[in-house]
Length: 128
Image (tube, rainbow, N blue to C red; front, top):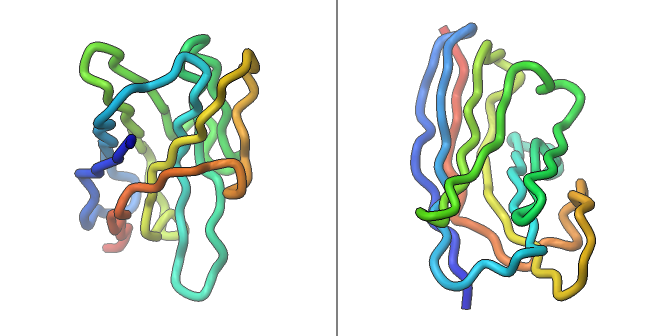
């Protein structure tokens, strides 16, 4: 059973940077997708970024393109989300999630439905 444990998060001023970490325990399948989602109070959970494990194919929410970078370190079974130029509207609880796949497909799902396993969430607050 794959488990996701998140770390990072906290309070940062607008324009600042923060890096979130998603540590994956268990076996990662080559076609798995790891995604980052966020949910602000009173809002629905939304896709932020995702990475297909084998191909390193990545996808981002339009509003974070050029500011956020998703990456993986295979040897550590770890996925990072580096967030730069943070804005108050980035404030949310951030979740990492895993989509299990047993077939070849490099597509990164951008909705919550396909993701089977979720981390515990971590708060990111952007405020002065």
